[in-house]
Image (cartoon, rainbow, N blue to C red; front, side, top):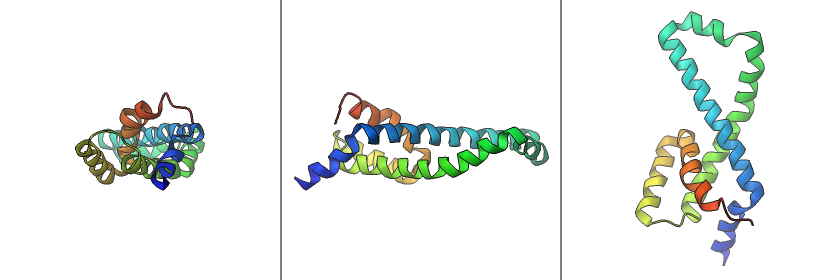
Length: 126
């Protein structure tokens, strides 16, 4: 009974909406880090610093750092919790996803959200 209650909170619509926002924020964080890394590798550090320090981009970087990092961390913890308690597929697949989430940390959690969490909780209203 307690296990069922523990698995049910993650299926509520507010929690699913929060994880959707967290997945978007984590994806934006990954995308911006990839863009900055690509710019650094192709244009050099000086050119990337001039791009990153543009005045109108500073609020974006600030919001991404202040909101994106905690949201990405909470998405990772929530997807780990879902994988352990509520994932209904085979044990082997659950272990694989758990290992991917542990090793990939917040980089893999948006992928888990899109591939597993949304499909499993999409049609339910709790």
